[in-house]
Length: 310
Length: 89
Image 1: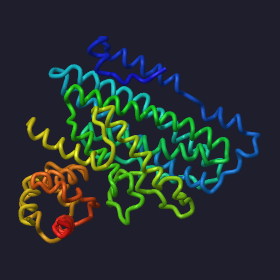
Image 2 (image 1 turned 60 degrees about the vertical axis):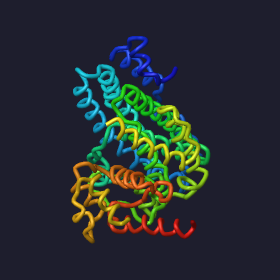
Image 3 (image 1 turned 45 degrees about the vertical axis):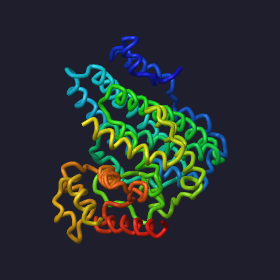
Image 4 (image 1 turned 180 degrees about the vertical axis):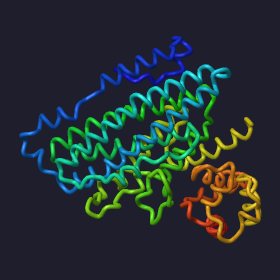
């Protein structure tokens, strides 16, 4: 079973309605579900499943915080999609349908699945004896998601899904604890599918002309360029902010659960992230990008295209 | 060139040149004062646009910054890169 990635084609050639997208999204959601409680039960008498390395604990400490920020993110984009859809009702029915389909997916399935991830990791962290996250900190991670344009928000989420897919994949390959491996593996697969959803919606909105190419490229470039968001944890300083916390800016904040550099920052990992970003740019825009210079040039060219169009 | 960069940034962000070139203004201040800049990507876009308009985009990197950086420091980093480029040539 596959995610519907050719959204505009489904609308234009197969006359798909909102109910068709809803049914397909739900079918895929059910197909992908798994139970953390069943995994815990399966390993309850396995001695290796009770041993959590320092690397396992550090990863769990961070991922709980990362996953907890998805709730305000999902709510904010879903509300924004709803408001945008209302604006397109009379002027662009395809755009309206895409936005309502996006809203439904975010509000029903993405939020549910990300909540599942947060709970799954929290169950593992409790087993590992990691100190429980306080109310105060959890609430900090649930603060309002900053305003931005819909195209950029979708690309930001796609970039974050890439970050976590690659980080979780490291845990699957390197942890010696079978529960850690199995839970991270299940969540890695979910996140990979989420990335595909986000880029499919971005492509559809680009194709029907309601988001500009520059919003795709600016966010991708801002994320992956040297010194960009993907490198935030290596900067000497990051922007101070109130409200919403970008989890990737909090890596290493707790010395008791310090991440090993191999887990999240090294040349190989950055190259994997770059390749994934270039791949989704091709999927969304058709542009073949081979390196960061080409991405920079494509972004700069897209600024001029907007000017001419205006 | 410094003057032109300030003028073009002023035009992009719709903030007066005087305000933009005052000594302690930060990129976060731009975000708070400008009606066109909502977040750090908009700030990056302002610099990218100005570099391109002045045909500097091949010579200078689009600045990397935190919102606490001063506008003056970012402009200086562009000017330093340009000087270095001229030396190379």
